[in-house]
Image (cartoon, helix red, strand yellow):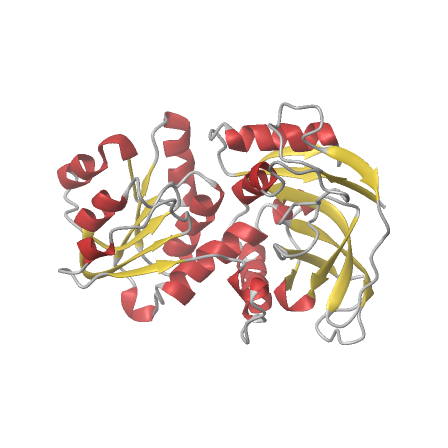
Length: 336
């Protein structure tokens, strides 16, 4: 089968930052599905792994990345019970396994959902990773529930892939008042289109929020940079509130700044369940199916913004460059 990967970490502008090659089509065993991939979307995790996973070395076998896909099941392992051959599915995959930038991919059925029926292939491909991340950070990490309806949530980085669907889930599913950040007219408009009640410029966030009458937030989600916004989040969070972040931190975050307010803090990594094969790994199957239902019912909408046609080195480079430039709104999808 055709696949696209890399043997060493190079700038995306380098001729060999991606290479096309042939590899054996894998065979499913156990709970694995063999999926014929129809489209993939590109996320920041893709370029970060491309930049860092093969530094100062040349891999013997190219590394295939890609963690968002839509496709059709071609074969199943002997322990599969949730799907059958011919089913259309969507999923975000597993960091420990070969990615979706290939014609076929193996994926554990417990982290796979049924493709939303009313969405196109490319519209569906935009959703798995970001929807899982946004859903888990709100409902598994912060544990927002019915009693929280009407409370306030600040989403830092509303126009990106995760922010775009997080706005929708916070507003339409959790019933929260949604405040988010954006710094350009086009990103502000996009956030409002997703359902944000208020959009403020991150460059003067505290002053703008106070001027609008918001002194503090019940919940804060960081989708940009935990340390960069740490002091702002510590100032804006309500006593006994909850902050959660997906961004990681090169240096330790100053948790002591949350002590006097008794504020909770959580990390969210969408791959935790698959990396550690947790007992509740199948929750991602259930989340994806629920998100598919909400998409089909029109409660949520795809965050697709741009589509490239064809699994090619050129298109992967183009998509990675867009994300590295940090100007992407919504999601970029490559349709095979």
